[in-house]
Amino acid sequence: MSSAHPSSDIAACEVAASRQNILHLPSVRALGVQLVAAAVPVVAAIAWAALDMPALPLVVWALVQGLIAATLAYLLAMDRWWLWIHLLFAPALVLVALTGLPPWLFLFGFFLLFLVHGATYRTQVPTHLSRREAIAAVVKLLPSQPGFSCIDLGCGFGGVLGALARSRCDGKYYGIEGALLPFVASWIRGRIDGYQTRWGNLWDVDLAGYDVVYAYLSPAAMPRLWEKAQREMRPDAVLISNNFLIPETSPTFTINVDKRKGAVVYLWRIGDSKC
Ligand SMILES: C[S@@+](CC[C@H](N)C(=O)[O-])C[C@H]1O[C@@H](n2cnc3c(N)ncnc32)[C@H](O)[C@@H]1O
Image (cartoon, rainbow, N blue to C red):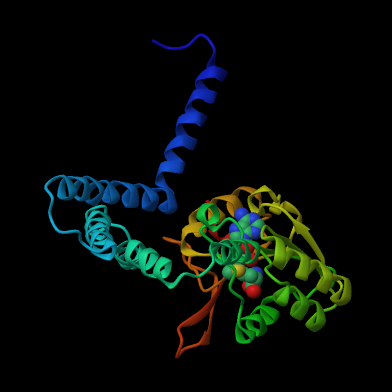
């Protein structure tokens, strides 16, 4: 039976979709795998004690948990590197606990990582920096006419924007960054090199106002970035991606930055790819 209020249908669909999205986040799936895998050794350890069996070291139960978690991850077809994380996570926890290091050290490490990389459990894009050779390739791809505008989506510490602004000072450069420490660094750098940095979510930026959109994100972000670029960018604007290809598209240009390391910069002219 259809609802009398289409807007409530839409709202219900959006809630269902966002719930589904959360369940599809690799970090949420990983947490689920760890918890399910932990249940088995916990029950087994209780039964073991009830049967008056000789006590086993905690690391043995942790290894059992790791083996179960890695098997579950394999059955769920998670990426191969997740299997190692699942296998070693609980044993590593137990071994580190045995070192007697103060707990605040781990909290400090967590906050430091969070400040540098931001909410990677959600964005699936950590902070790593474009190489000098890739930036040199981007300089060659900038429009020849002066006054063009260029944005770096997820500008990190501002290395790309600073280098572009110094090489082609006839352009206007903007950055958006979601992680606090890189944002602060890029904001300060922008005061010196002459570009602007905003703190925020790159998915909220309207791309219509830019001639060049540069992104160095991750494979997970590329399909969504492509949809957004096609929806918002002007036909004569270009999208440049460092290293990550958009599935099922042919870039207008490809520059092999470093053949030995397989580093590549791709450019799509939006008008060439729109139907
Ligand atoms: C691979 S780094 C690239 C940094 C810089 N563009 C470069 O090429 O050197 C990606 C950056 O995007 C940022 N980022 C990821 N998702 C974001 C989001 N949704 N909103 C804003 N920034 C984001 C990360 O914090 C990270 O600094």
